Length: 327
Image 1 (spheres, helix red, strand yellow):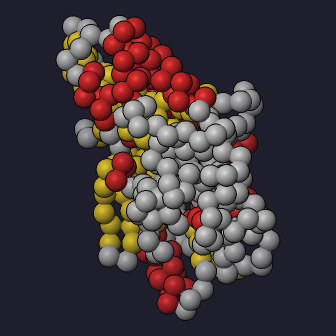
Image 2: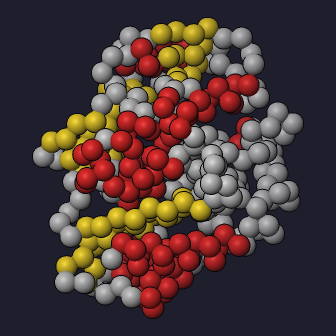
């Protein structure tokens, strides 16, 4: 990898200030928490920072707290801590399940919540030094004519990467918000507004500016009568990214759906909220026929490429399975 200078920052304010300073000096700088994902990019020279800001040395950014509004999860909380927290297991089980499905035990012990949400694409063309793909500033998305068996079937183009985070779909289904610190201060937005589609900007996956840092995730308490389900389809039971994942949270009363959240992972460049399927489910009792129809609606508009048409039927089946399990 390219040589760089490591800086152990002591506060969010210091980190934001340094990022601004390096941007003004036209130097490349990046922040890391666990570093497991970003160091991989550095090793293949997809990322070549001059400065690496270590956020793990900032005190007080690793926590899981509850209050009347819900859960507050620090950006540097590890995936293992999230998976094993008793409060999360009791009230946000799908989030605990999603954290436990991410990567390997070793990576979960160091990988952070913010890092999992902000990870870069796991497209082999993007992560190879042999291809100057569209997302790296080139002129071609090589997946269109190349090997695209794991690429987007929804909302792709001009880049067909998928968002491989395990946590993000579960958090979106739970109605999470994300807190960001930057030069203008702090702001908190719904998580679903955090991600950016390629047709808006094909060089980035989220709205973070060059001097912005994620500091906290906020998850409201589930409404009474809510039940969640998380499942991840992958090629290997060992460490692997999802081929398709599904997160659902269904609030029902007397067997009738009052509110539904259906979010798919690894089918689109962002965690994909199936809003039309959610609307279809409201006011209905979920049975096999209803669940199957919701799966069809969730995948409306899918445009698979030559190698990934199988993902359409797989995603439909997972939506059906998730809805039946969640009710």
